Image 1 (tube, rainbow, N blue to C red):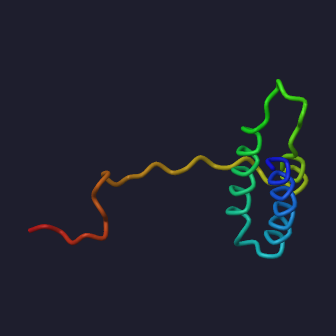
Image 2: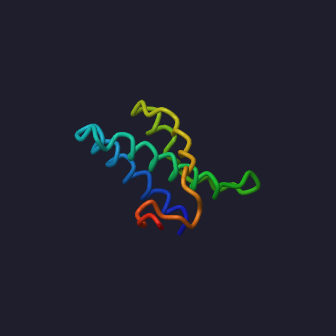
Length: 88
């Protein structure tokens, strides 16, 4: 079952790369999605098992995507919404 899911992710990943080529605004989101999917599939691999699941690394490299940028740190105080009105 895991092997089938990895195969599906690779197939959809290639479609996502093509969509990002056709719509440049999707490039950054597609890049981060592909890296996250590949990391998830890599976490399923075990050096002890002989079964090797596919990954997206070759497709990511062929598409020329760089490594994902680190997430921005939140500037807000946890529990305080910038959408709330100011207290008087």
